Image 1 (cartoon, rainbow over the protein chains, first blue to last red):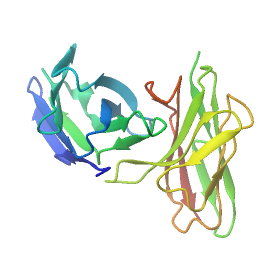
Image 2 (cartoon, each protein chain N blue to C red; image 1 turned 60 degrees about the vertical axis):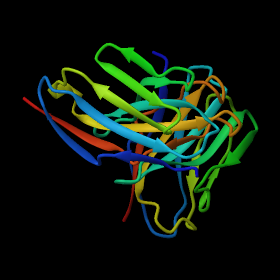
Image 3 (cartoon, chains in turn yellow, purple; image 1 turned 90 degrees about the horizontal axis):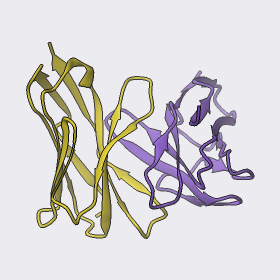
Length: 113
Length: 112
């Protein structure tokens, strides 16, 4: 019940296309859902996050869509660029577990020029 | 510049040895975390600390130990009891347990 399942494991998108990464969870106590971007040899950087009281959050080319009833959320990257090539992790947290983040397995995105 | 500093970037350990990974932050954050990253498995929580002189085990604490004697420092010791220590270790910090976590650039530990 503590798992967050992320798909796909890898994704190849043409420049200018839309990248979509999906995550699913079981624990209904989760109340915060961040997405992290990680480049090789670096730590993850917080990209965008959402709470379950909204269905969508947009920041620039990045959008989180959240479906509370289905217990799913996804990251959409519009107009994907080669510089977006990185590994993306979704995560989830419940407010009664000391800030512990449960991470998905990661998606390696490659944007081809 | 404010941030989280992990050192060293690469670390090699002989079998049977303990090794300590450093994590320092100058963000004045109360909470600090250690994660382990393995290929294809995401990040898993080893230990976390919400306040100085207090810490809790995460999901994979066996073979690891930590201390939190100062607010800005949260060192992780990988003991000889950790049977598969080769991994990328990431330290994070946040203002509080319900605030966003920010990560350092990690230490890659390898066994000789």
